[in-house]
Amino acid sequence: NAGVMQNPRHLVRRRGQEARLRCSPMKGHSHVYWYRQLPEEGLKFMVYLQKENIIDESGMPKERFSAEFPKEGPSILRIQQVVRGDSAAYFCASSKDRNPGEQYFGPGTRLTVT
Amino acid sequence: KQEVTQIPAALSVPEGENLVLNCSFTDSAIYNLQWFRQDPGKGLTSLLLIQSSQREQTSGRLNASLDKSSGRSTLYIAASQPGDSATYLCVRAAGNKLTFGGGTRVLVKP
Image (cartoon, rainbow over all chains, first blue to last red; front, top):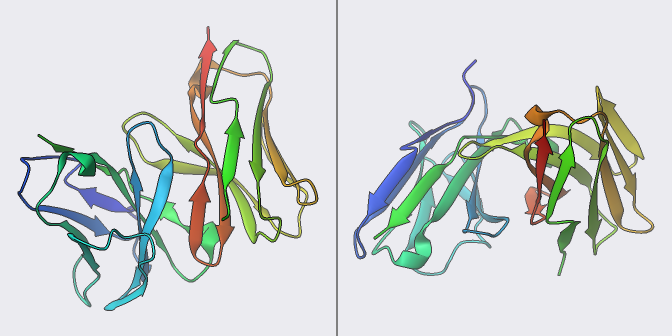
């Protein structure tokens, strides 16, 4: 049973470009969470999704950021018109149900904006 | 605002010493308290999960305690090894949200 998979592992974008980060949850998991870790800071919750629904996006910046978890395929975190301040590690976690103690984390995508 | 604070931010010990990592949180009405390990360039590995009704959990050389009245959790690592070098994260879980502490960077010198 493969763990949570994220790709790409490293992503370099120029200012103004779009970044798409993908997360495939563990098999049988229908809950996905995205977290961001800025340099020298702790991880912060961004968004919680279930299949085809955004449950909680209280941690998402209001502009340029969006997330989806379609019926088929991975969850996508999309950042439009990236700026240098978006450079961070973005972690995805998944869980089978709504139990916060059972989130399994992916290896993260490190986004660098030049 | 719920916050999770970890002290110290960094810790360096010789191999064989016991490690004590502290975590404090402002809201005692937590659901779970969890300790993770983060290795450079890698994801997070869950170490111990303490349910709100529990006081401690143990796994091998690791022991984590939870004192809700004082808003503290402590992670003990006995007889440290160089392979224990990593960042340790204390995480408060409420609902579906995890609130992370800033982490303690541990270096165990051989």
